[in-house]
Amino acid sequence: MKAGIVGLPNVGKSTLFNCLSNAKAQSANFPFCTIEPNIGVVNVPDPRINKLEELVKPERVQMATVDIVDIAGLVKGASKGEGLGNQFLGNIRECNAIIHVLRCFDNDNIVHVDGNVNPIRDKETIDIELQLKDLETVEKRLEKVNRAAKTGNKEAQTEKALLDRIREALLQAKSARTITPQSNDEEVLMESFQLITAKPVLYVCNVDENSAVNGNKYVEQVKELVKDEDAEVIILSVGAEADITELESYEERQVFLEDMGLTEPGASVLIRAAYKLLKQQTYFTAGVKEVRAWTINIGATAPQAAGVIHTDFEKGFIRAEVISYEDYVTYGSEAKAKEAGKFKVEGKEYVVKDGDVMHFRFNV
Image (cartoon, rainbow, N blue to C red):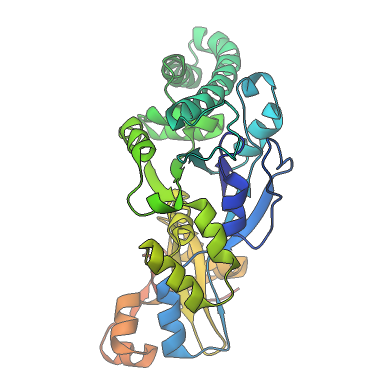
């Protein structure tokens, strides 16, 4: 599962990517600096794993991760191949969610591709290009399905009805994610279309250091614009975050954050938000060899969670032994949680809860 960072050239995408990952994407003051998508595997900050490490004292700790992709900047006409349009659109199609960076700071030293700072216009520029590309996809699909629908084919008629609704929304400059599937069949179809504007989105307002806590007039404009989109808006001073990552010690970083009025780096907030955007959650395994956070889809069953460790665990699943994170921490160990009756044995139908501490029994 991957989240792609998108935006116009020079809004801070590559600098943000550098803050989030150990990979160092090239970052410069001109468009199209990031030509190949850079992929960073980023640890998901989670205080729960620190607490489990403290209690269990394992030999090693493995955190959950999320893949972040830095994608080349998009310009007007991208849907027709302008700039790096085709490549940009192909790269974002491969991602599962969108992190849309908007420039919300004034700085005469950093060129804006359209001449002045206006996050509303910038958002609309990208939205329109993505919507135009999706419209092209939908209309091509409609050409094929229309013939079958006229013959009375029920499946084709269902597909046509959904495509017509999506097309109407796109023509009104609305994204495909505003269309809610009305049935399981429509949900499956919507997934199969692989529309770019159907992907969940998170907006990052890149502000100056002084606006990192409360935002500014540009942030307020963005919040007002997206209030009906069911999308989260995060305020981040990407320049300040870059400065924080250069500091050597944890203490220095904390002093810097306190001076800014923050309790943790904005990058940590963003990574957790991206994890949630991808509909991911965490369960833990905890033993003296290793404490580990495992990533699963929200709604995953116990066998599916076991399969993340090894496919044999899923094939030969017998049962899951479960202690909630809260009970594990309250009682201080697996043994004491068992003594208190907080140890549960669950079968194949069990839906894993975020933070469950689990063991699996299997036989292949």
